[in-house]
Length: 318
Image 1: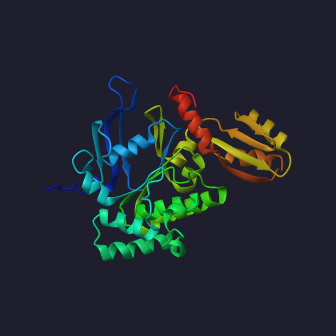
Image 2: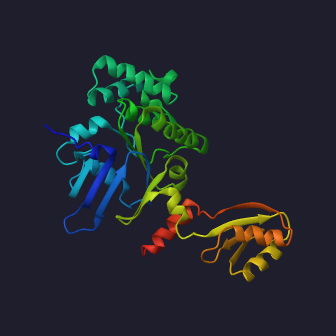
């Protein structure tokens, strides 16, 4: 009997020195990855070929690999059935069965996950309603548009109420409106069903829109794993965005005299405070010259800038 350790159940997945090589003696697709990922909304980021899809597929037990991997505490090598019963998977490419309607496909997926037939039918209808295909549920999927096919892939992934949802490039082929609608559905899932989400994408906006943590992959290695807000803040300590109603040049000169380093983005001042100084220094300098501070907040990089910086710090190129 496979007994799951209670402490491990708090993790979506855990990897220890995971390596994957597709050809004997060839280049490694994954190079010794070790991670512990909590039950939350996680973005798996990296360019095409970084190893994202490979990582998802080996955790589903679809690929052999070196090292150790557990999903919800189950061994990815020996407990594939237990994992697949608890995981929802939306593959990057179409994975439908010719001739089936949406409700037939989703109920079939639910039964494969262990649900009785009657429960599978009920869950299929519910999932298709959620993704906005309730009125198209009896149509054969072959005639669906790209956007509808993406939605039915999401419906079959959530039909059995999984504990963790693996989504591989879920906005592939969607127009801007369809993409935002798909991301809104994904963002709502954790609060709706309590599941964790692992979203694999090369699109930083998709991850920034839906996730609170990120795993950055570059050429088969992990260059960052943690909270997105911490990634964006790293290296920006004690740097503040400051905007005044008028007199930004006066404030910049005064702050420079007090030991601050100043950069400019048009009328926005980027102020790096000296050691042990607080934002009180900014306000006191503004008060001294009767300047009105309209905006002051810690500097945060965009996720794109933070990703580029992480790649360069790892010694790679984007």
